[in-house]
Length: 531
Image 1 (cartoon, rainbow, N blue to C red):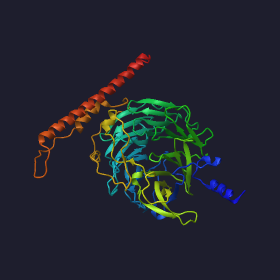
Image 2: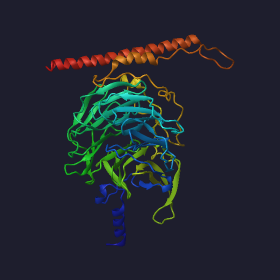
Image 3: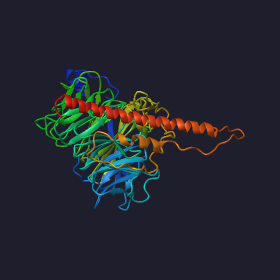
Image 4: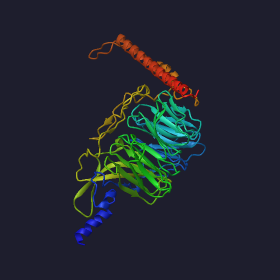
């Protein structure tokens, strides 16, 4: 064997960023083949964070461009820590926390449309929504702006609607899925019969028209939450008995993680048009930790973090066989208790580092692609995922347009049946959030609607009341001034009357459509002989 052929063979063997096609001597071309992870220095970590020891399989962390939130140990109740994203160093034991739950917190999620709003789910059977001041917490926060009570057992799953403002989905150990209008505190849909056992995970699709779930019965379900119907079911997605996870991809496919019959951890890709067989299955190892998927719809990359693992694996999903391509993995000495994933809006896409590889003098610019926050037992460690490029200019292929803060729909519009994908913003030149006309929808504490967890699939009776409460109030008389032409009072009153009438009509239509749907289900049961 010649030295040249030996060198090429070694280079193929040592290259960790290719998929399994290297066995055939062919390297798949991808702009993410050279993504590699780099942990931040110790001085940039957050220390003395008492990460929660709760046995619930959640990430225990949520990150947005302003804050990082971590569920922590707390005596006599549940609490989570919220600090600015730029925070580093030691956290003092007297640091204020969000501590309004009466039992341990199981999950936390930031609103995708307001970086100051966060929801928390707890073993006390409630979900609370909190407003964090721009400057962070100055004192312990015990009173939420909204408390949602509709579950009879502990609540462990939260999922904000990706494009509709203030729509929140919750799932609990009562095998119940609830959909809330957080602005009013109203339970708008309830799915009591969709799952016979414990729900492991819930994920919205791109436009928020459906959700996918995995359950302890090993089945994958695609559900329309507004109609309360199960659209698709696949039995035994993974044969193992350990918990599974599922996430909707941007093209409508579903990626699941679970265990084989021999307790090997698996990753599978499913086409919702045909769930009879998976498009791809990859087996990894025999560890016991549940694989938590973190999906980036902009790059179609998936990161898998196993609780108790020392590694983070990352994959790229494409339309080419074998569809799921292993890129590489990040490995460290200490296991992770959980992880947080920062969305693209929080990255400085114009900042890069200069590096040199293989002893060559050619400079490469390390472009920041994603950022993780790895939870240790008493520390939060940032990890950057970077891509080397030969230019320090803005890389449009790495930073396509991403979801912004502005919602595509209002809550009433989604409840009325409308669907829309998230509104995208450009990252070129850096992203700064514009002022939003919807940003103050939760600033005042809403009047909560009393809920009964034993009711049907929705609560349409309060729709007309909600429309009356939300109708705009008449404005103060206006006049014309020098250089400023203001709308006359008569025109304002007419506009307010039209808006109020539109809201009332929308509420009536919504209530009647839900009544018709209920009667149709009753008629179907009569025809089937169930009644």
